[in-house]
Image 1 (tube, rainbow, N blue to C red):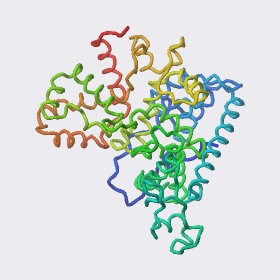
Image 2: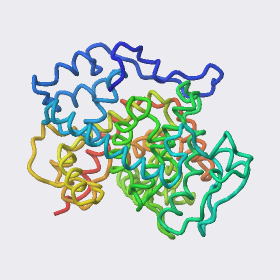
Image 3: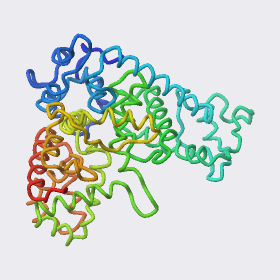
Image 4: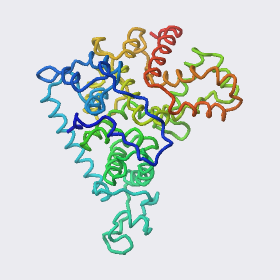
Length: 432
């Protein structure tokens, strides 16, 4: 079900020898601080209830041992309630695996490449539903008879608009898949690339409101590396998308992440008004230079291993025990949840960032700010002096921020974000 706890920590994230330009990994397992296999197993009662408070504290101090990272993430992302038992979670797991298998089969019926161990990188259909009978397309759909005109290679026209929209995204998913974490040995295997493509294709079919957008492959990739079972990886990714899908929701006039960029501008204006004014003078008042950091949660600014360390620290700090029940209720209502309901709960079960929001009354606002926005604000604050003295245009801003790649410390970044968050809450009037 999960990775063998005896597997060496760095074997999951092995970089291909020829890739010498990747950010250096800074994360190190620290005895007594990192959530170890032994500490993780000891956090469960005999029936299977998890002491989430102690677990969150341990993660914040030193991250998670890579061999148990997948199963811990399932709790952090709200796949399972810490108060559930071993038996209850196994029942939920099996039910979700069946649900995923059904959805995947629905997709396979519409497009047989799904689940075949292959994927496509060329368009297969036109916007009016007509199949593209290009030799490259046919060879990807059926590599054994790609150049033939055999009937099994010939796609039928599609009239259902939902199906057409879904099929139009499949080649874009493929193009992104081959570019995702290409430095990792893991993706030298075709089966792993196709697994990533399958999960994203199924998600695009299920989430009709958002579908697939560039950047999702970066968010999904760690899930299939950490969790052996494809269905388990899918549901972990699906829970992550519940937090982030608003960033990917686009209209003709806006992109979802613009709301977070606007929040970032407001925070910087409060915390560092001189820097904010300077950025506005340079024409960067929309903060689009921070777009990538927020969309893929710093995947490009950190090494693969360090970005996972950063994510789990963020999720531990933000942890809200209400999320599990909110997700379950939204599943029943066939709607997506994007926040937490404010019912009474123990602060001990909440992450440190969530506790600060509760104390300040920030949870009463319409949309509590995610810690990722304060992480970016912390990076800007740290580079404030350099930006003020050296940035003479937006190109300079981008260059200065690009220089942080591989030079950020995940724990320090989270600590800085917490300090800024506290400072910001003190300066901004409480909402009632």
